[in-house]
Image (cartoon, rainbow, N blue to C red; front, side, top):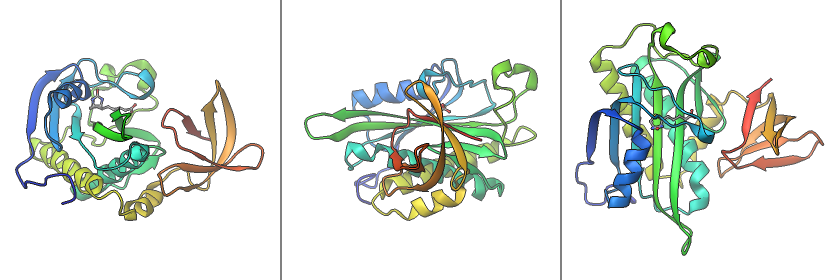
Length: 254
Ligand code: BTN
């Protein structure tokens, strides 16, 4: 294997009852030097983090909350690609364990119908001297059955759940294991871009009109394609083609 497990040793897996955030814990451990492929899982997060400074609602036994520590041998500019690869890995795992087909909203929100069931937060620490990653944390949160009443009001119309009933422990563990395996397999061989074609088949925005939020305003655009770097190629409001690379841009379906 290129970089993931050169010594072929088992990858460390740590399971906690409660953590503030598995990403936060993974970052702490990465700074302390844990090896690539380390996995942190929690039954509950009290300060689950989402993209763009949002929080990620993570009640006990209602989802899978896990983070992977990676020390990838790719340039830091390939961060979007890692995130893209992770979302394909999650789609594969869900299909394998549940048979359910899921869709991806660029960059990496995973939907079932019009409900978001998985969020992914990638955080990286880069060495500015050589432009390589020190480490990358890929945090994945899957929503299972949640008691409706427990869901904060603002999330009720957006967030969905993968199962109608709480899955049994075996299904839950299998899904967590498959997510880890599939995501690591793709991230381990990022230069093989085959997964990008798979990404496109899951995309819920390609060929559609979307709204792009940047510079404090929404603009209408058409999503055309995914670039080799995982960027979203759009036709903007002036009819020009451009590639969006930043995960810090919000898009919506119209
Ligand atoms: C998003 O949808 O904005 C991303 C959500 C990412 C949530 C996961 S849950 C496990 C990991 N730990 C965190 O604090 N966040 C990620």
